[in-house]
Amino acid sequence: MSKRIYTLTREVIEFQRAIEPLQEIFIELRERLKDRATEPDLELRRALRDVADHATRVRERTDGFRQLLGNILTVNAALVAQRQNEEITRLTQAGYDQNDQVKRISSWAAILFAPTLIASVYGMNFNHMPELGWLLGYPFALGLMLLVGIALYLIFKRRGWI
Image 1 (cartoon, rainbow, N blue to C red):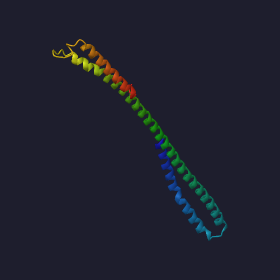
Image 2 (image 1 turned 135 degrees about the vertical axis):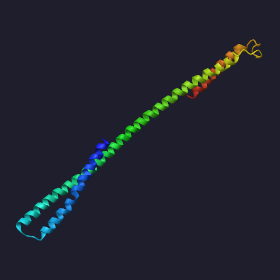
Image 3 (image 1 turned 45 degrees about the vertical axis):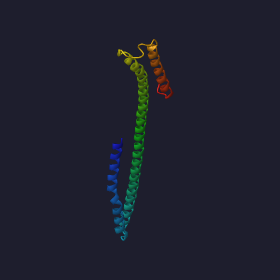
Image 4 (image 1 turned 90 degrees about the vertical axis):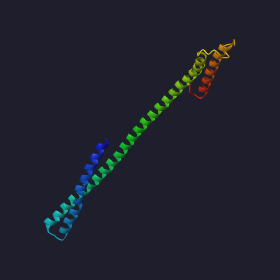
């Protein structure tokens, strides 16, 4: 659309350049015929005045077309900018939504990581772990996993990540 407007504007400008010298030509011809008072010369002067008036109207219309095309181009540019803004807004919103999803996934990964870390330490089969000889060692480890998981869940829930 913009390309077509530019093309039309160039055509109007070329037309303006073509008709601009006509005004001076008609003024020059009327001045030369001014001193003559014969009937054919008076008729020719009237005809030249009519043609000059038509040329003036054409020039004014051409100016109007040029201004109109400029306004159309401005409106077109505004519409294109508005579409771009809407697209950027849509992409920004998609980025926010994706960020929320990443927060949720990361939160659940952190919640699951803490118990996995504790369980992996107990799964190493060390001989000298103080909890192995303690009767409540494994229930303590399970409770610690549950406590860390719940604590992380509550922290992430309060922050709005879950």
